[in-house]
Image (cartoon, rainbow, N blue to C red; front, side, top):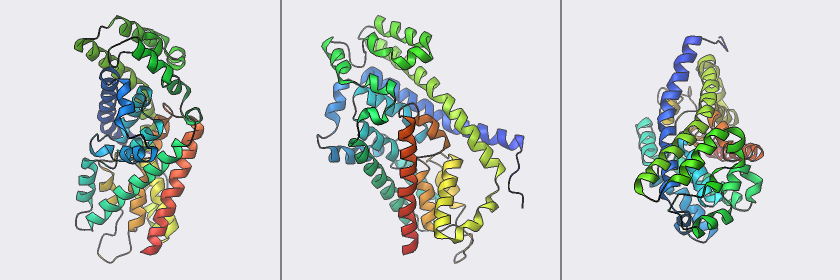
Length: 348
């Protein structure tokens, strides 16, 4: 059996499919981040969640039920929320849980496994995703922001700058121009940073002005994130079209190999959480009682890790977090989800 073969036409089809699937959600996330910037006052972020770190983290893990967001669009949203003053630990919890704890994803998972105990898969997927997201959020809450946030995000999230905005009596969401031009935007794209600063300086606290600001911010966020989506989609398409499915099926017989193989596939395939359950269902046994498919625990690992960590997300996370934190987050997610699923596999 041929283990690796590259076909340009198949690559192009897979690449465009991933882009067409991911770009709408990315655009939605960028629009949401622009609306947050223009219409959400920074003081709301401190009033939104309970004072208790534990309670706030738990609530953040459930926000996906009210504000569902695909992993393709979650990064610009949480970057904007952190800049508006939301605790980074709560933002990380929401980032990891929202792509799964969503009404759309719950329904799609049920439909994909219909006739194969769908309630069991939905329950375990939601519960494990929520538990992992909350645990990671609690760990992040014990760290210093400068240890994990990217310098440009950290600079814009400083409390003294939010206080300055409030003291100047600006309209909600319209920050002083000094807050807009960060070290990153100046060094990477000074023309765009200057244009945004001039736009925000000239705006008045009117509805039309806020809409203009929201569109400008959404466009800037979309351009920042889209390049990483393209890189991730290209790498994913190489794997999708070059490695045959039959090459990994023999690994389904061993609990450890099956779990970590499916997590590797989830990382490489970079599927959207709204449709990944239908792909996972194709790796189950084709007939009742047969052993030619991956076990339940391996499929659970696939559906839990994929929305939290994949090829494209590694690049997208760089817009918010430091590379060292991303590496530690990836290692922690793989080990935690892997060990839990291997244990479930041993329990039958």
